[in-house]
Image (cartoon, rainbow, N blue to C red; front, top):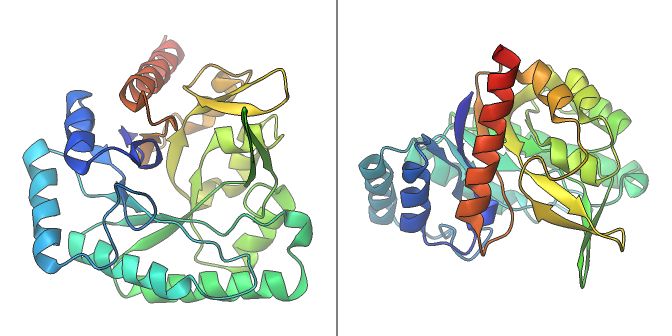
Length: 275
């Protein structure tokens, strides 16, 4: 595995500080946010600014390997296609290989007929466009989210539901996935490792994080090991995974502490497996 930090927890952290934290953790990859959050690179970034970003990564010894943006192709329109194509162009200029995107956040029960067809058309269009740019779009396994005063609830989307994932792989032949076990768990899938076995040939990289369930039934983000997820079962089939594995602690206020906890937890788990 190539360990690194994911973008989302750093959405309020300036890029220079993100790089300093990642370097200080002796990690080699930082997932770069583009046009999705306050600290992200903008869509209208200039070529000179792109060169400055390259220099910043090089100075800190961090690879420009992964990026992330925001989109939703499940809304019944293709409004996000121009944006995602522009982000792909930026990735090409930066030399980034993997761009994390989304299928969308509509409940899977509503993804039938024209809505499903439109999502498939959008995804296939993005994969066609990216192929010529040497960029690989990677769809995150992510449910829909309802926000409450004390936390969130996740529900099944097309990238959480097993049958929808199987159909996606058939309808979008080039699709690749970012496997995030905690996103399955928080949406009610108690054994995310079973889903991994179904999609493993399509998985390009991983996200590691966790959630804690409150008395209200809602969840709040936490670091790896804080839920009842069976991490031993989750990590067993990932032992020989050789792609990026990024820590996505989601709370912005203590993101460095959270990412470090995730890193130490995962390292310790793999050490235990070597004994």
